[in-house]
Length: 178
Image (tube, rainbow, N blue to C red; front, side, top):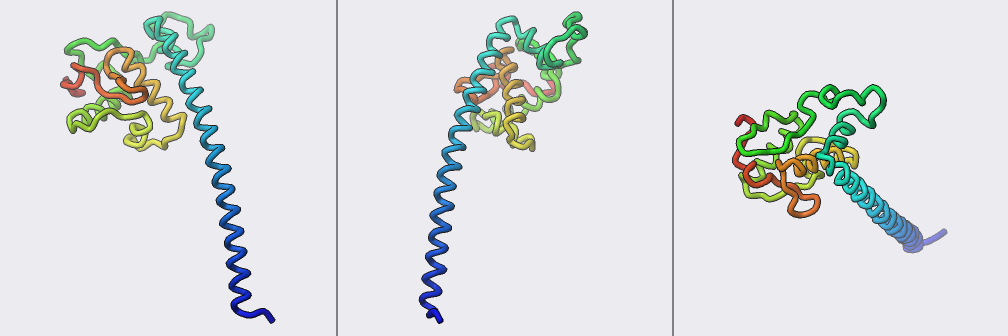
């Protein structure tokens, strides 16, 4: 019959082996996570570059595809008919009311205006997703990033650091009701 000390040593050895195995698995998962994040960032950069190229056409192609998906024979009608009401983002100019934007865009501006009033600095799209009560899933974050980039391209937002958005100068004094 084994002694109590011998039994404790066996359990300790088994626990140590399990901890070592879990550490190795955690290291493997951490390396896999780093590789997946790198791939995700590369795809996000590629998507932004494509967005930039499409935006060089004054955003007409990007807006139409964002609102309706890829064009087909039914959606190639006049761009005024193809766009949903308030789905296009007009170029910002002095005195323009936020009400010209859809609710999603107004929500982004409101969140950034609150940050501006509190001198809290820019926000990432992941932080915006969390603020809006969305799961910080890549698809949700990228949808917000697409909207934020469109607002930057039209002069409503500024992106002084990559991926960090704030209100553009002049827009900061407005609110959704003006």
